[in-house]
Length: 187
Image 1 (spheres, rainbow, N blue to C red):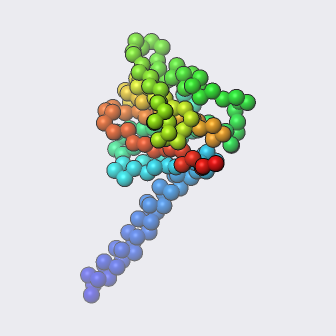
Image 2: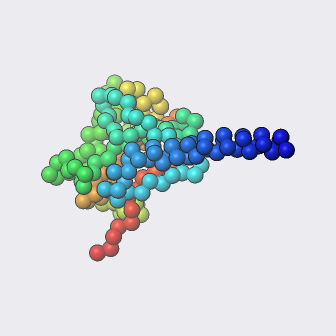
């Protein structure tokens, strides 16, 4: 009988802690929910990785909206949202120019490195539900991240906006897709 009371007491203590731990993940997602809703984006929570949303670190080279740490410090993702629906920064927005501007800020000037930039082809644009997309493999500035390698991914849909994600890592084993535009509405 005493053993059962101890088990029940232990469960009563642990259950609220578990509820707090699981609820915290939902609260963290609230940081980017206005962007997800206004830009019609899906956030894809990877099953194999645990994510933690963190405040952006200040630096003069790359301003971003949120920082997502991925499991056991193996990767971080710095995310920028340029929403056409929340606030239109310019009367005309050119995503390819913004991509190149960001690329020039992220790559150090004193580093002699090759930058591989890949523009997305028609099939990938269709698969991702976007009008424009590109990615680049680089070594980022130390002021931006402590990770030695990065993959810059940017994609744009007219009247929705642009999403920029800087995946920072030590080993480029598996870069999870975290954010995508929802299926296009047929007109």
